[in-house]
Length: 387
Image (cartoon, rainbow, N blue to C red):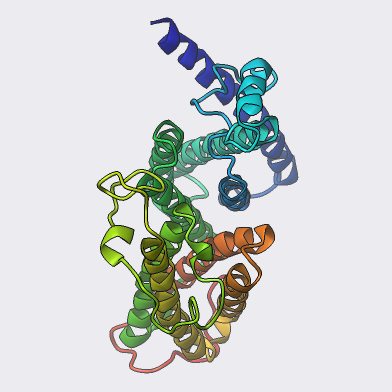
């Protein structure tokens, strides 16, 4: 009973730290947009939350890649304390016992800063959901094409689920399936916020989505599906630390088809570094994980590249299409850097962030368009959508 009570106390203190961190951006936002329309203030809050959520995804990658995910091996506090300052004694003992282990003073701070940022983003999304419902209940100033507040509510529920997966990541000792789902959940959170930001921009400008043909719309959905599979594959590579299984490109271990164990590599429910039967995960299994990601990357680059090429003729989509093409180039460059340069931290963090940015950009394009049954070709060049 004492442990449970203490855990609730640590959770409350973690929430208070998040509240303090969120108060500054909220106060600045309120002052900066004090004369704006209610929809304009809501969009500003959505964009701010989207920006900070992207920062959180990047910092989460930094936490994982610096092996700081277990810097504080309990949750929500650090050895029962709200900060590593109060946990100096147990951290020192753990670091002395294993200097290269998962618990050090530096790693503890990295892990707790990640939790502080996550709690502040959660509070911002709570404010976003409340604000969306307040706007929906207003009788004046609500556009006819208003976005349903249930989108913000779904985002709030999703971030709560993310918090649960964050706790499981620690308590289940970096279980690969849980860590992969936690990373995927961060990408979904970015996509939900991006969709709301685009729709709110349409509300402000009183503009309808750009009509496109069914074939173009299908190409967008296919590209999003391919990216989702590739993101899951990349998460599995990262959480199993399989990046260095192939240290050269385009071959792997001086072979175009190295020895691989797909059954062991893609046994989903198993501890980190172990096969489903409890034996150490073989190098052939790690190779299978890495090589599969390479093969899927070819499909993803082709799907996204073709989509960007098809959409280049639509001036109204110029900004997101240019972002899509630029991010695709960045992903290829950072992916290659991870292999040939030995997994440098900067390239690895950018590769993780780039995947989330690609997903958000595709959602941006989808939210800015709609399928028109009568269109068989590209829409007129003069049509515009919010960017």
